[in-house]
Image (cartoon, rainbow, N blue to C red; front, side, top):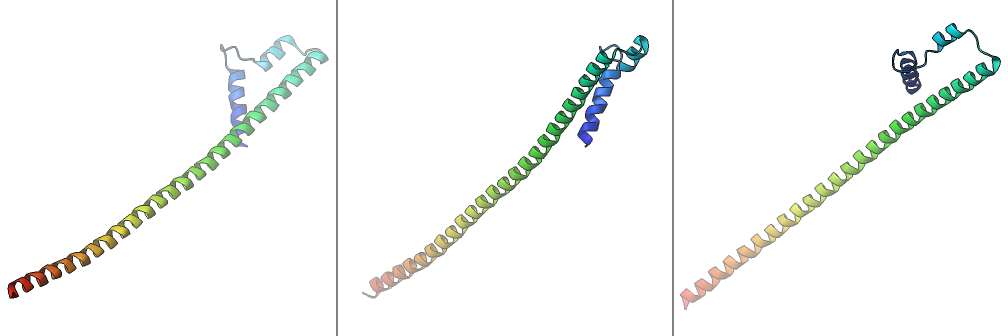
Length: 125
């Protein structure tokens, strides 16, 4: 996992940095010699806790990334669907407007013919 390696690198940077309060495990051990078995067992438990915590954080990071990828995909799909629905709606409106316009043209032509017919009958009388 890349996340575990990143976390380990961050931990090593923190542990090994000078002047920031980080623990220099190798320097302390060399200066003090080996500790009692009880102390070594306590240190080992702490190191196991660190490793377990690092693994959990890494897993959470990976899960978060996967969640965001899924959310991004869902968001894109929904946004595309909304766009498609709106375009379909507007295309239907355009179709309706064209049908109304065609109907209006037919009605206008009939009215003109009726007016022409009325004017011809008035002139004939």
